[in-house]
Amino acid sequence: MIIAIDGPAASGKGTLARRLAKHFQYAYLDTGSLYRGVALVLLNKGIDPHDMGAAAQASMHVDLSIVDDPALRSEGTGNAASIVAAMPIVRSNLLEFQRKFSISPPGGEQGAILDGRDIGTVVCPDAPIKLFVTASVEERAKRRFSEMKGRDETVIFEQILADVRARDERDTNRALAPLLPAEDAHLLDTTLLDIDAVFLRAVKIVEDTLLTD
Ligand code: DC
Image 1 (cartoon, helix red, strand yellow):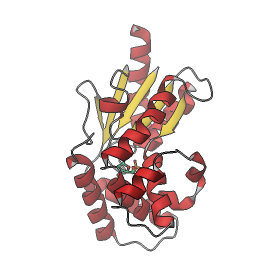
Image 2 (image 1 turned 30 degrees about the vertical axis):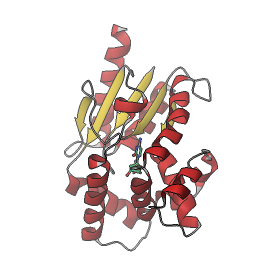
Image 3 (image 1 turned 120 degrees about the vertical axis):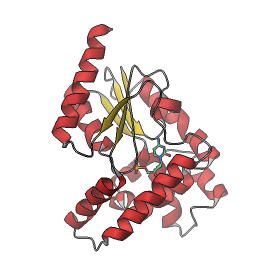
Image 4 (image 1 turned 180 degrees about the horizontal axis):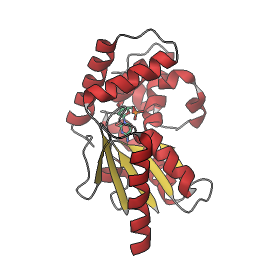
């Protein structure tokens, strides 16, 4: 079983994917962390994320140990990730790793859940279950703002809103593998739903699909 989950920044797709993975005991891959990892390698070396040669080099080998670096989750790394993610060479370098994970999860689990921007459209177009998780831009900025305040970071709401808008713009309008719901994706708008309600809807979609297979 492969479950593909896509959606914009701060839509709640990561939280949903983790909960589903735990519930069904499937392997989980946060593909955004791969793009963030490439971006962080550049930022740590003081290299401009627009440097395509350096980004291509950094994306040749996926180093999952960087996933534990707290800097991976910062807004700066997220913005830089969205810049390197628009580069075709970076996307093709990371594609094989993601496909392999989906077909044979490293822990030998019976299924895999991948979340990102192009999982249902490009990485796993044949996934039997595709979810597209979204929420209004204001709601997503609010969530990001509370998350950062919770970590005692100094944040300005208008800045977060502008960052989320800029990221949406880049992720949606890039030429290759833009953020887009697959034609057969189930849409989950989380603007007015809490995580428990979203989770229950997603579980029902998965169970219905498992029953009809
Ligand atoms: O989901 P996230 O915020 O961690 O993703 C960071 C950036 O990586 C996002 O702005 C776009 C890019 N990304 C992508 O292009 N394709 C994916 N499958 C996952 C993330």
